[in-house]
Image (cartoon, rainbow, N blue to C red; front, side, top):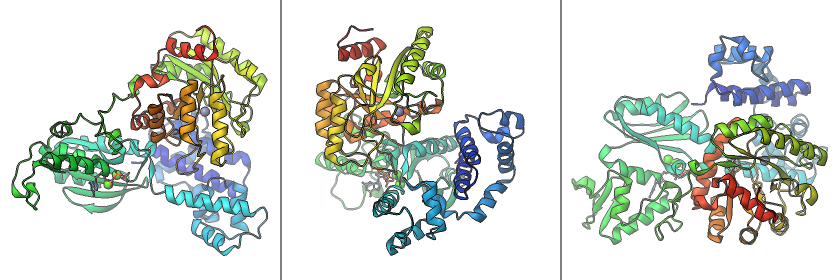
Length: 586
Ligand code: DGT
Ligand code: CA
Ligand code: CA
Ligand code: ZN
């Protein structure tokens, strides 16, 4: 299922990493990384471009040599340069290189002087204490490496929703096209919109279960078949996760959909409710409870309802409960609110341009937001302390504000705000002084460094930003990156209460690597009556597509549209910003 673009991007990224480890010329390394990025951003299937090398080379970031390698891969399934590098660099080192906080120099040192060739040999060397004698390997560094390995292996078994969703959608699309298919959708944690997915669950009904199951097991991207039946199949995908297919009778589709969507605790709560009302609920339907041990469907007893989820909820005297709420977090006790939807979002309030680490000019970013139907876009490039992201100095910010205002003046149909994503420094101070911040229309303040601070320091730091009169939104408040770093662990109730009091919005960063705030945090904000922002933190065109993951996370936090500032009209956002600054609305 992994498309050629993604496969090739990974190969180029791996080649860049291997070149770096062999001490190759820096520009060669960068060139390979740029090809990887270009391939990731490419909307068309690169395999379709290989017959036209000129078009391939016309892509920004892809030169003649890279084009040749791409063509070689599409035609032969391999790249000679990659194979040759693998003769020199142990493949397992690539995994070591992915450990957060381990730079190429350190990995090279571990390899050449520490005998490390993969994760297991690194773990063994750590356990044996043989790395302590290496230069620059202090106790603190080794401790960090140990913690990172632990973090990776704990998180590594689950897949980010942003990776799983497109794979699941491609599977569903493929199965939908098979003759005889009546219904097919993904279920499980993915349908509930969880931030990570253990395995993919797909449910279908078909007049030809055998044929459908065969197609599922022979799809592109299937690496290994684990279970092969006409009602249940299970495969391992080359993308690194497992997928299950259940084929059920159309008449019991709703009951199966409910069961396989879960969560398990939600199912348990539903079954208990059913028993109290004289029913028995299972994956085949809602049956009358006659006290018999043997399951009713095995005794030829017809269900009361089974065809749709809604009919089952109704018989249980419940409103339809949307999948993101099915976690046994009170959804049976009180009627769930009308949740925010992707279609409600009309403002992007956190986005980057080439002025810092984005890939679009101000004009292109605005045009993209407009094309997608937004009516407000805030340009929020990084501040000076984010050196690695080319953060703007005071002077550069002043010039940038003027440039944004120029574009704003020339643009119709979308309000363009001059903003900044200003670093919240370690002690809670902001990266620009108040006078400069006051020149901006909107301020997103985010933590980027020192993300291992203790709870007390982290709370004080974020509290200072929340209470600052010129901070409108606190961006990705904890700084966690899923599967890579845990981020800050502030005292959340304190922050949420302060944010509600100061009318400061807390962000759900929609990028599926972040999803920060997370679902339970959103729920706390909702309960405190605070405001949420859902921003994609776009650095390029495709990042806008991440919005759905932020919205799913917000739905899991019971968020309604009115509490999300991104659903507000430009005038309402303007009025909110003006009120916060104590000035008249623009
Ligand atoms: P995951 O895959 O770990 O991200 O989480 P889920 O929720 O997708 O769990 P999974 O794949 O084990 O099973 C899919 C759904 O099937 C689950 O949400 C509820 C249902 N299910 C599976 N096994 C059981 C079970 O033993 N009891 C009950 N009540 N439900 C189950
Ligand atoms: Ca699952
Ligand atoms: Ca499963
Ligand atoms: Zn950002």
